[in-house]
Length: 210
Image (tube, rainbow, N blue to C red; front, side, top):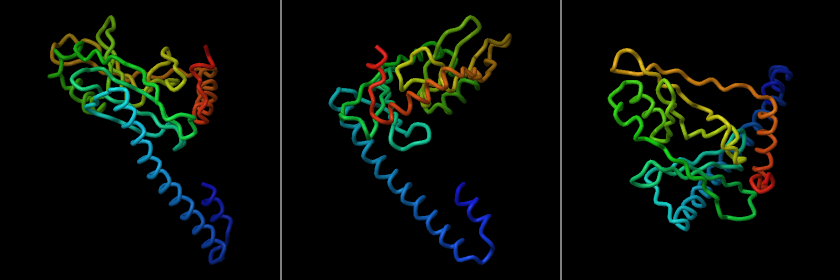
């Protein structure tokens, strides 16, 4: 964005335009290259921790958290189960040990409905990383790939970033599906941003809150 503004301010044909473009390409390429190296390193850290903590994973999803490439989130589905292990790793952590949270998928709740079109689509979208909650009118389908809003701070009461309400229809061949909209909580959002910054810096938010 800064480069775009800079180029707009420079007259056409100005040698400064080429210099700005070169610097932008250099910086962005360096960032992307560094991210690839960090991703390889982070994958190795999670793999070692899975092995050391005797976590046998049938599927793994590891990605950076919001707006940075220092703090990464990893989720593993344990073999032959619907149990998941979720952990965070920052390059600034003072240790290579990753603490994992155990989340039960409760997949059995919707197994009878795998033939429903809505369920098939959600299973495909979530890539097999999901948890189910029972409601008065049906079920809640939570996509685990993106986790809870303040999950990195250990807040188990914060809502999932992507949840879908599956409600029974009069017809017996499908559910009605509605995305659960996140309610804006300014205090929560401010706290989440602050906690994210602290977690990126390798600070143990869980212990500091106790």
